[in-house]
Length: 159
Image (tube, rainbow, N blue to C red; front, side, top):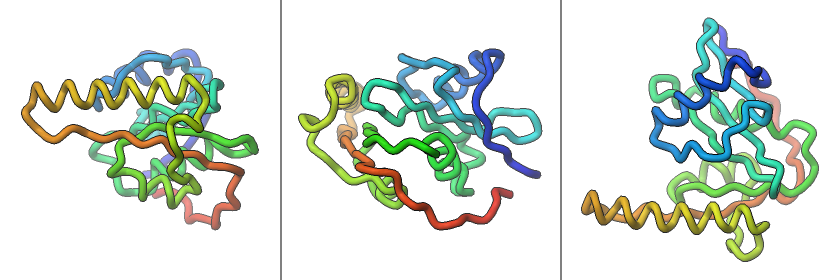
């Protein structure tokens, strides 16, 4: 089946919230107008937003049963198409390789705009709190920046 990428519409807002919650992400700052969606047979299977303050790439999520198919990468390319300003993001350190391949590089939280630095601090604090509750290793967050628009290599269409 074919997967399409498109900007979100107002009626997509409940599905975006449900998808973000299903992956146990913080559902704050969600605005359907800032999202691009991956859609398969009418169902939303992935989403990403570009928050204006930063700007910050945020809320990248792909349904677990659709991962490792290039959907996240396609969402990033679609959402950042035409954006020439530096774009920041906050992500778990273990995902830094994924974002590096999309033109992002690690940076100090202090080099990021204030809203991004706050997201990083909240992510660090929440990760530490949850790791104590679960008695597991804390999830370390990293701030990354795409300094300028990359010239992506052409990709094959999604399945």
